[in-house]
Image (cartoon, rainbow, N blue to C red; front, side, top):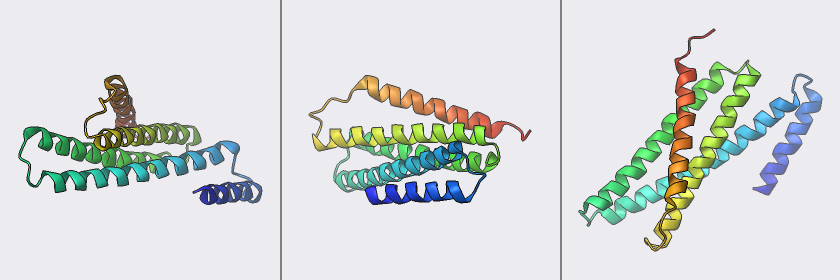
Length: 162
C-alpha cells in the first residue's frame, strides 16, 4: 500500500512539471479521489464479507432480529452503491468546474470515510459477538452526516445545467 502511495505521489509530481495546466488544487483532487476510492473499495469488501457471513449464519435461524441485521446490511450496501453512482455522475457533470469538482470529491471522501467507519464498527460488534455495545451517538453521527452528503448530491443532480 505504501508503495502504491509513493508511486501516486511520484506520478503526480511528474505530471505537475509536464502538464502546466495542472494546479496544486487539481493534484489535491487526484489524491482525495484516490483515497476516497480506496476507502470505499475496502469498506465494500468488508460489507460484502459481512453479508455473506450473515446469509450463511442465517440459513438455520429464523429469528426476526437476524433477518433485521441482514436487511440492514443489504440496505447499507445498496445506499452506498447508489451514492457512488451519484458521485460518478456529478464528477462527470462538473469535470470542467474545478471548484464544484473539489466540493464533490471532498464530500465523496467524507462519505467513503463514514462508510468505512460504519463497516469497522459493525466488524467490532461481530467479533465481540455482542459484548461490545455500539456507540449510539457515533452511529447516529455517521447516519446523519452521510444523509447530508446524499442530500447535497441529490440537490446537485436535480439542478439544471447552467
